[in-house]
Image 1 (cartoon, rainbow, N blue to C red):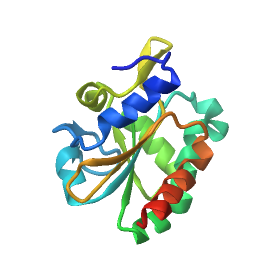
Image 2 (cartoon, rainbow, N blue to C red):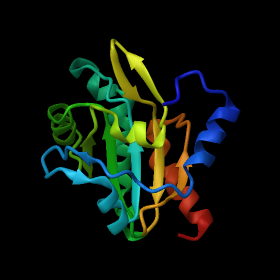
Image 3 (cartoon, helix red, strand yellow):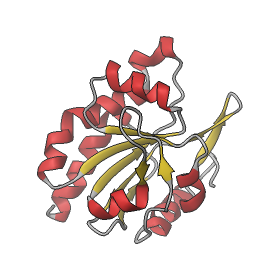
Length: 175
């Protein structure tokens, strides 16, 4: 897994390395829904996946970048669905914390729990340590109808604008 000290060239290399890769055969907790087999789910639905640290403490949650990103995708979900994409958020948080986020932010898209960082290991995604816990660095992946990665956004400098960034890319692509 990549660390937190990437250069701009490293970030471009991460994005390039991911293009065309398939989602790994991992099973992730689904919060209030059933666990999800990621490869199977991605091959049956084009996806916009955003990976987030899940590092906010409950008291700081309302203003946290994770909450801003959740709300950004919630607010733009209908535009993404109109283009045929489903939205999924993935972090190393346990399912209970994600259930709380789903309720507090009134999310209609699914948050998946990956505390063992299975996806990060399989795809060599960037992570970092926070208070003795390994977390995803913020990135976004767009998969096509066959579950292959078509676009990787990394780094993600503005969580609150990340959904708009994906939609802008889709417009340029004619999606």
